[in-house]
Image 1: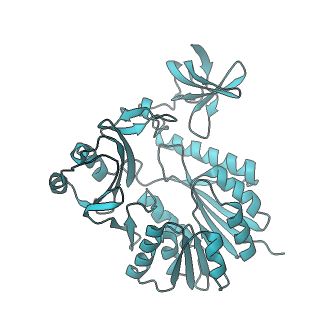
Image 2: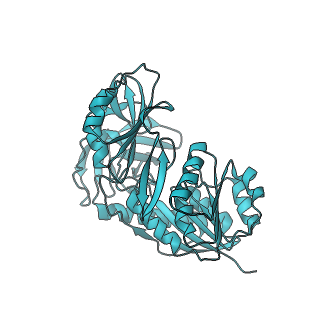
Image 3: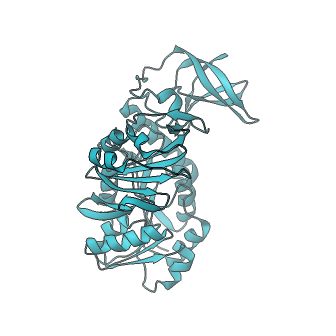
Length: 402
């Protein structure tokens, strides 16, 4: 056990101190706090530790409303006021973007209209009939019977998970604007869910066992900014509807009626369909089959006949596009843009790039390469994930004139 002073928070929301001149990451510790710690992991370059005693607490510390906060690790900033979490994310985003991409202007972080009950999707692990989340960086289960970040419809369902009869596996629960639930069970168990009970107590849109619906549908409808989206059980969709709505509005500010848009990693078509109402044409590319099928349906139900979708990777699909592309919209996974995609975008020479990112590090890496050809006009942070260390970022880039 050792007494230390916490210097700052790292990019994952952990406290930073030094033990024998080695950087040490401390869970559940805030800047300026003096704490006793116990090392839990020692590596050549860093240590990991937990707090055993708070000697002097930060004035910014608040009592977490979550009973699982100290062990779960999912909402790592729930011991800070919401205003302080926004400051942390603003400073973090500015530091990363400036360090790696050379953008040193102030960056606004847009707050989430709902700071609790905002998640429309959660994933539970189920082990020996017990369900919850894994502790950070482990496979140790933390049993959960309530999650403050989840929508109220999901919270109401959690208490009835036992009626699914799962002993071991994974459970994904999604909710929509109408509090309907889409349940995806992944298990090797021979289960007999009490469907009658579940449907009488919850709005069940569908239950999918592995990849086969056992009741209802394998998708449901979501609504954002008066646009309708069919979302399959295995398709990506933004987990915070309010922030998704704000992203739609930001994109619309930078689309004109003459634009031909290339929507990469288009998922179920959300960003492209939103942009289509102001654009000339939209081409969407996605590698997940169900997501493309959803996107095609979504274009139809929103009466957007200026959109074409392609199933496959970027390298295969892009050569099929013969139009001159004015604007590229990208919303990649956490890994960011691969080198081939970046090269392809640069060769297409669009006049505008709209980049929506869920990882500041990979975003900054990509911006560093793109800024050779593009000016970074706008960067805004969006608090898609309140009380976690994650942040969504909206970027607007314009082609440099040579």
